[in-house]
Image 1 (cartoon, rainbow, N blue to C red):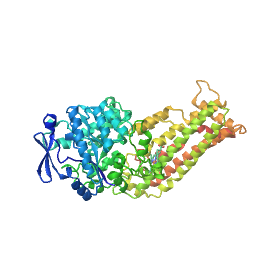
Image 2: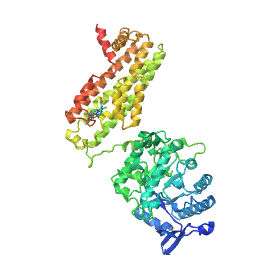
Image 3: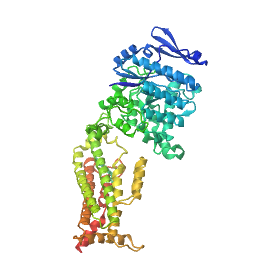
Image 4: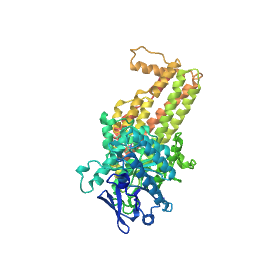
Length: 623
Ligand code: HEM
């Protein structure tokens, strides 16, 4: 299914709008020769157009030529009339909305439409949208501003909420470009002004916090690849983090919101398309051509088809994402179910036939398989293995954090109620899982060791300065277990969310803290004087453990927890050791991509233990 979501039409004729409304400078069409016409604005020439604009048969032939199955047509922004009186803009919208449906009715089911609304009057805009959705439009095309109002204007946000409620797809098109006095020539309003307008529209919605207020089921797409947004996201992000005034009212950094909107593919350059997909994700980019205008894609879809995107990504961009965006029957992913599940009481049509959960949709297999993106070019065979192994480690780290959080919760509960044994058993059970996972993690390095050092060197320079130092979850595991080292936060400066999460872990009680708090509650660990040294405290904790082991008739369950914690500690050291061996085998004693001395640095970490008191207790038991 190939769907072009951004292309335009003009009817073959329409009433004389200047005469109808008694005001000058309305768009009109002047047929110049068979199949050709000029669009005029008042007396001013605006654009040459040809019969594909108004003749479905011509469109369908060109769609067949280009392998496009469905076009979603919309009127042209020059017809928006946002600066006209409400009644005129509404009447004009109705004329062209009905003309669009008439054109679609002759499109043999392959033409669908987006309506336009008088966005200067929110009530009228909402009513016209509702009328149009009932009449068969799939959504609405709006301009990126109404006079001085950007998309974050409360009225426009209300309209977008209404679109979400109606289940209407929204295509935002730049128009009425800024700075035209300085761009009188060379089509600069189109080449410079339009991308800037679109950037402005997206940024306004993000930093104003509008996306925080609008429901996630809102389906909104920005034309022309989102203008300059993707390329300048880094700049926006930098400003957001470094200048409080750039924060606006959004809850999260700007990049957090990129899954809240889509963009079309009208960027006309392979590198730009690749970059767009990398930035926005393959689920957020859809075929849009600007057909049949002079700046449109000449062979619709060729940019995507000729790209180096994977077959799955191409399928998404060419039509899969549009099916979802337009809520067409057959849309094949679970975003639809999310929107159905989150639809409010006034919720729109949503999916007509809620899909059954499948193996693939439950486990998000397509999304998972999109996540391996080698950097080497041409792609080195072993880079995929390198990525898959790291990702697998990170998934298991995630599970470990989840289970260790469970252990902490159970030990806290055990401390709060020392008479109850259930939580102690549950903590031991979860710890057993943690040790089994870690055992697998130790073994996994052998797979990576099938990669020759030379193979790794072939793509290693692509990794810098990324490094295992930046594994947020590994550091979280260390902090959660009790090895807290604030200095390690410096490696997470480039990823503020990770930095903040690690900061939270630093402040929260660790597994080590909670375990000994529970022993205190059990009466095994006496309070020490304020001025007790760290060594004295350590010895007291070790003696508390020793006393558990010496009374195994009463504390079998607690001893089991101690054994599991010891085993976990032991296995993490094994992990460190195997990592070092693999590092030496791969890069010898060279420096790491994170700037450390490599293996010799890592060897220092072998001394680290989460629960040294559990080991000390063994020495005490022999005395
Ligand atoms: C060819 C494979 C690998 C090499 C050459 C390698 C090399 C290194 C080096 C040299 C360091 C020290 C920091 C630096 O300077 O970058 C490091 C740290 C680290 N690596 Fe690897 N690594 C490899 C695979 C892995 C894998 C598969 C994982 C799994 C998650 C991993 C996780 C880590 C972690 C968590 C650290 C931080 C350790 C700490 O600070 O205690 N590495 N790695």
